[in-house]
Amino acid sequence: MNINQHQFEQLTEMGISLWQQRTTPSQNDTVPSQSKNNPVIDLDELTKQQLFNDILLAAGLSIGEVDHQGDHLSLGLFNWYFTKNSVDKIQWHEQQLFTPSISKISTSPVLKKQLWQLLSKYNEQ
Image (tube, rainbow, N blue to C red; front, top):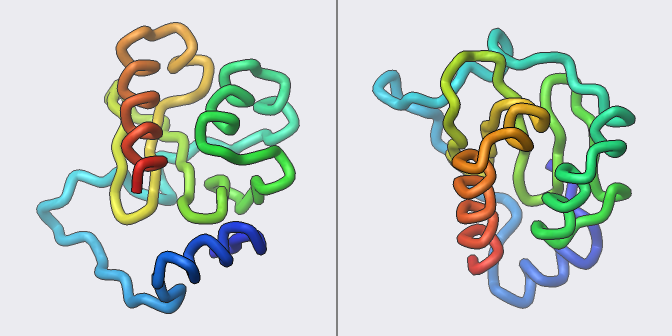
């Protein structure tokens, strides 16, 4: 996972070690598959959408801190996956954000609300 110098300094000040072992999701978890259900991401197309830019601002990030990793976006402290499945739900699991496409979120007040609540909770941590 890539983080910028500012994020590293914040984590260090909070006493958070960057080398923590992660647990893998159990078979009972309902986390979307990270390879089968994720569409191809066009970062240039995303940056043209106002909602995407607003989400970055809400997360305290700039476009320069977004790293395109094939099937997801690395935003430093968490990874963002866009899912193809028909579930209209936003999920957060072990520093990974799973959402429908930006266009689907932008047309759904329920999804927008879920995302803003999740980002607000994330920013409080």
